[in-house]
Length: 263
Image 1 (spheres, rainbow, N blue to C red):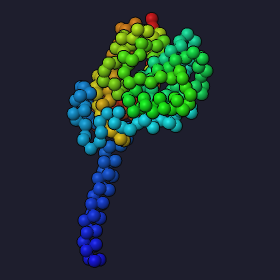
Image 2 (image 1 turned 30 degrees about the horizontal axis):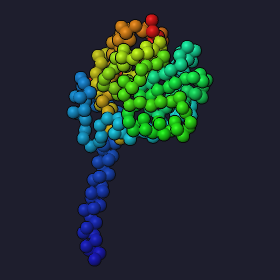
Image 3 (image 1 turned 135 degrees about the vertical axis):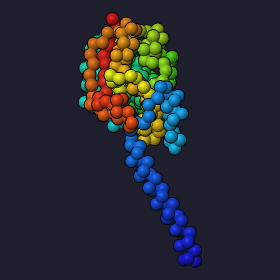
Image 4 (image 1 turned 90 degrees about the vertical axis):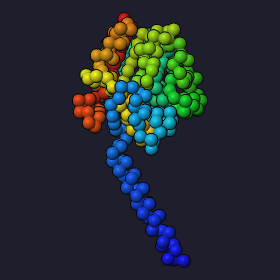
């Protein structure tokens, strides 16, 4: 009996060792938030994505992420809070693209006094929207609404996007705004990969999935908003190293934020 167990156990032990080595190798060459490849489109990036992980933010099981940010704000949030305070003097509606379960809505409320008639709409992927709606019910927040498609919104006085534009294929934020019935007076953008070189798409590994990820050219990015009738009021940078292996010329060391105001 013991010899049989030993014979069966050896291959099992070898397989466990092999699996462990594979996991370590995968973790070493695919660090969370690492990047790989340079592509022209999201479709090209998806075709090149490794098959051993899901592709896309909806499949990343991200609904429970960022819960630690619901009770306060980070240093990187302060430029947004500074300009949002001014915008709220005249604005009473906010449209946020990629606002997750309400990270900014809950976090900013710790340092901002929202107008009593404020309406805040968040557009995100279905799994996140469901989690956000459940949380809003639990918290009794009746002025927080969630949608899946930007076409479900007529627009708002203020548009926010923090760390989300890089994951969007189309429409662009400028195109979304152009389709709104209510044209925003204020557009606040934060934590966006903008640099001086040509725009491109890469692949980001976020731990549970691979996502297509857009890197923007600064001149083109600002120019699209200016062409749409907005003036750049302020811009800021957050130190954050981005390296694309094999493409040193496309690497940079900061993310950017912007405040645009309707001209």
